Length: 438
Image 1: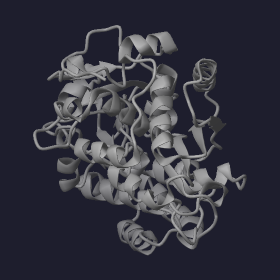
Image 2: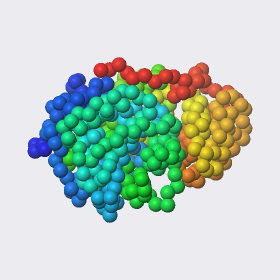
Image 3: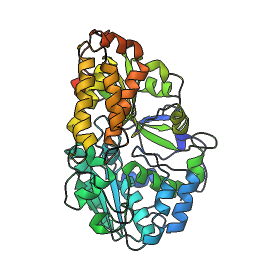
Image 4: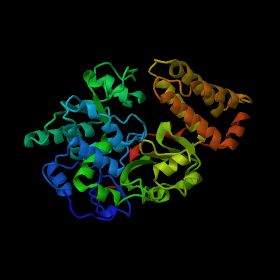
């Protein structure tokens, strides 16, 4: 354990161990896998300190750690709800990352697989779990290779009392939903499920299941190794604390994954990622479950989720994307994609999303629609809050955001015209590639 409490992000051992000096409160994640010796040089002791259930809940509560999968639920409360199931549970790390523009989880598993596995071991040990699973993103051989190599190293050293079984997530947007992950581990395919009880009570193999995002587990390992005082020395006074991974996506198809101290101005993050904001027509905050907003709306904001939520914004699963295309075209592409991902299990998803995609597509792509906005609003009202999972709500949020934030462009489209020469959506017309920063 580290006894001295550093006071800045520069000294934080971090989710990113970069050969480059941190630029203030930001680090770019390299595509370099850390072996176990590398891991020890960065983080210290061969074996993690043992933490009992009550102590771990207390540490996470003091740290104020929220889940990094997108929902942002307090991790301490989620873990505390497992108190009745100590010695009976299964632990799952969700790295499926089904959000199309997200790359942080895959990058973390490539770069620091041991840190994620340590977090899993800590939680599994505190819960007295019988088994643990690590669900990784589909069709990413770099992730598979890094995780398998790390597991071999750990088995050789007999580091993990609870065995970790790696699994590859099925493709599809809904495959990353918690209940869908459990369905896949139970051999039933990537469909969200209606459970009579929450996964906490009945999950994998009908056992109580604790499931959280891989970044959350890695952060748990860092908090246990370094202490809550260290974690709280970063971030915003009074909270939120710590750091967070983000995928910053440029309109030209490039992206970079960064670790950022909470409270950092978003303008600094954009500058670090070398995004040409003068070419941006809109910003996607939070991915396909987020909002499309004008670039000037985020210019003075900071990476502070509670404050962003007050403005109706957020970064969701850690995504900020830029587009040079028409915002309505972008929204149309996202809603059409989500409609194609329906699990076919409920009316709002199976029937409502294709209808919404059709109407916003007509508006975006040149059909003169004097009553188009009215029909889109009617469909959105019929869909929201009625799905078997939250995916239909995401399509409605995207739709409503573009209608609200770009009213002038909506009026132009109602007359069958468009203000943008680029009629092809950046988020679907470009193959995204990693920025060659390191």
